[in-house]
Length: 95
Image 1 (cartoon, rainbow, N blue to C red):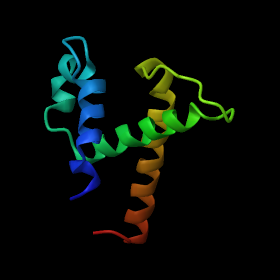
Image 2: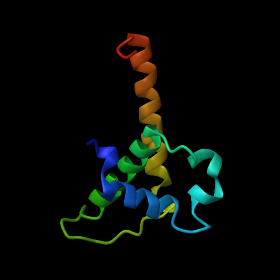
Image 3: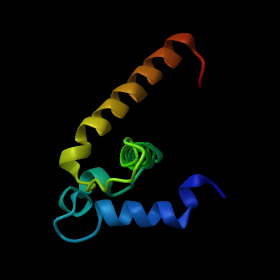
């Protein structure tokens, strides 16, 4: 099995993107209809970073996970993946 087949990961994705009719996955199906590996990767990167941030002080402080407080993290990870893609293409490191 791979990380993307983990039931916990799928539950988080469902809860964050497909919870109700106001969720982004429902509001914007053109972006989430075939949720890609990239989509899972970005979501997981943001979720993990937000979870780590909850322990930044050494004690657990709950941070509500919303698109508003995580959009900066998401955009940062998108930029990193785009830079990685450009560099690997230039170096012909990946097919």
